[in-house]
Amino acid sequence: MEKVQFDVAVKTITSRDRRYQSDGYHFLKDALDHTLKTLRKDELIEHRHVSGLELLEGTVEYALSKFGPMAAAVLESWGIREGDDIGTMVFNLIEVGAFGRSEEDSPADFRGVIRLQEELQAPYRPTREVLSRTKSGANGTSGGTDIEPPTRGNQPAKSKEL
Image 1 (cartoon, helix red, strand yellow):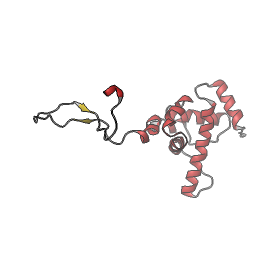
Image 2 (cartoon, one colour; image 1 turned 180 degrees about the vertical axis):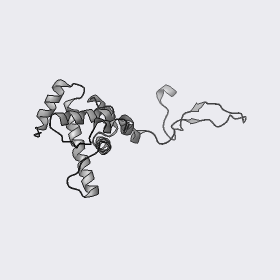
Image 3 (tube, helix red, strand yellow; image 1 turned 45 degrees about the vertical axis):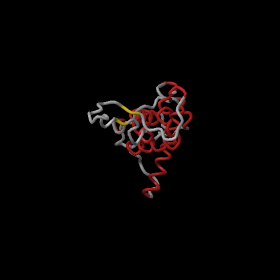
Image 4 (spheres, one colour; image 1 turned 90 degrees about the horizontal axis):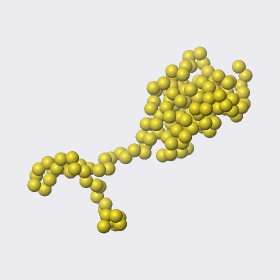
């Protein structure tokens, strides 16, 4: 199959499948380029096939570097919520001739491999518990499950706390 111009391929796809935005397809192409560059740097191989897992990991890395804490929201705005969505988009691009494939490639390569939203949000989750539970009451009895706010340090009280 002859390679088609990427923009033409995206217009063809988005005219018949509106689940994913054209910006999402362009992002996916950039994420694939990023993944290939990373693999070439690591393995010193010029032309190499990219597996579903490698593309998903590269997509997460690229999204985090490009969008930071907003990565999950940006991808979701384009319709990309799970690894399955990336796989569907890849196979849409293969179908119109924009991407190539090997005989072993399958949409199943993307199913349940990673939890995309989880991976995109993980670096921005707190690494310590924000609210601490009380250890015991003043008279030595258990304080139960009361939650105390973290100490403020030298921060002034907010007006609603006065």
